[in-house]
Image (cartoon, rainbow, N blue to C red):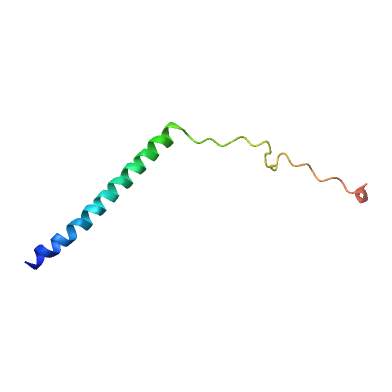
Length: 65
């Protein structure tokens, strides 16, 4: 009899957990489908970081002349 009472008390909790997991799955699937339809693109930024090839060569010092 004790096992039946424990099962009767546990069933509502398990139902709430199952419903919560189902809602979480639906939200995640909806989010994935929306993200696949609208891919995120980085906005073009006018500034580009200088690389070694684009940096200016150091100016010659007056003492070397």
